Every structure is written in structure tokens, then in C-alpha cells.
Image 1 (spheres, rainbow, N blue to C red):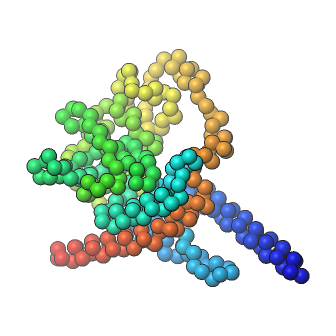
Image 2 (image 1 turned 135 degrees about the horizontal axis):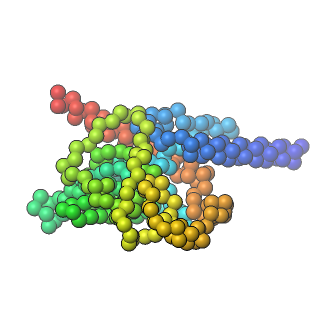
Image 3 (image 1 turned 180 degrees about the vertical axis):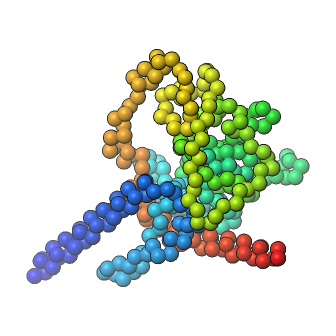
Length: 305
């Protein structure tokens, strides 16, 4: 009887684990086909995202699936030789502590931002730069993003470390996304695609609106370029108007089979179960910080009137 009871308990636990993985995979597929929601919308939907354990009765918090797009820097580096569980947990605690001091808003590649940093050599002891985010990367405390702008007919790019203590303020002047994950081709594009006024005012938008996708296609200057853009599957670039031999060479070096390589995809991503644990760990603190910011904004608006 005891052996039969143990076997039955094992089967129930195995069925629950399979059901949980199936539910996570369904969530992953639905998220990839749906537009990304803003952090406010995800925060409002995060209230009912709690489930109660069947046996222990403890409440387990499940973060919204949009968090992996809004806060990608909380996910560790997928390279196994760089993984360290203790260091990753300590870094997440430091990141949350830094976010309680300075507001790091939601932004994506293609968003127009303004960053103010402390500068001892500046007369005002700070420097402010406005530009479009052309690339974002890194994980943990090493997360970074690049802003680009054309100043006096000269392209200027600045790489900021997201959690650098010198950063005093990060503003999102226009929240939007582009057709490509990286906009490095703006270096070879016409200057008007990267020119933004330094005194640009932030655009007002609804709290619960979906992040818009800008379908703009930029026009590149004639060759030579910094990279072979014809060998990259770019969606936000107009026709390159190159001779056919360039496209033939690009087809020879292409690797279309990589999108079917499951092991390559596994090595480049964090498993969905681990993502769920990480975002459940930081979900409550991020939600508390967002509520505190909303209270500060309301108090500030009340003081103005």
C-alpha cells in the first residue's frame, strides 16, 4: 500500500510538471504573436496573476509574460561558462536598489531618449544628450544602450551603462519600436533619420496604450558601408539597389538552417521555467516601485494646482 501511494504521488507530481511546462509554452507562443504592452498595462494585469499551490497552499506570484520584453536585463547571460547563480541574484538585488533611486523607464530600440549624467567638467556639473536608441544589450549590471544623434552635421553616439551611478535621469521622449532589433545601419543612412533637437519635448501618450511600431524604412547612402547590410535580413531599409553579384554572394554565405537548430536556440536563450522564477522574484518589488512613482506624480500634480 505504501509503495502504491508513493507511486501515485509521483505520477501526480509528474503530471503537474508537464501541465506547467505546457502552459508556459502556450504563453510563449501567444506572446510572440501579440503586440507588446506598456509597463503600466503590464502592471495592471499583474494584480490577478497569482496562483495558489494545490498541496502546500502557498501563494505563488507569476509575473506577466511582457516582463521579458520590458526588463530584458534581469535575464542572465545564456552562456553557460558565464553563469553564476549567486552573482546573478546579488546583481538583481543591486539593480532593484538602483531602480528605487532613479527611474529607468520602459524603452526599446527605436525609442527617442534623453539621458542626463553627472559631468565634473561641465559648467552645470551635468550633461544631457538626446538621441535615438540604436542598440541595446548586456545583462545584469552590465546592461547598456547606445544613443545616436547628428550634431553640427556630425554623427555622435554615446554608450550608456544602464545602472551607472553617474546617470541622474533617463527620459523617454517618444516610446516606439522599429522593424529591426538593431539600428546600426543608421550610421550609413542619411542624416535626417538620426537628427533630433536637443530641446525636444516628451510626447504625451495614454497610460494603457500598446507600444507603436514605426514602419519607417530608411534610405542608405551609396557604398562603401561600414557593414555588408545586404547580408543581413533588414526590414527597416529601402531597396539597396546593388548589382546582382552582391546578392548572390550573400546567398552563398547565408545560413538559413540555423532557425531550425534547436540546440543553438537553447544555448542562446534562458529556459521559460527559469525566466518565470526570475521575474517572479523581482515582480513584487518592481510593482511597489511603480506604485510609489505614481503617488509621487499625483502629489506633484496636486501641488501644481
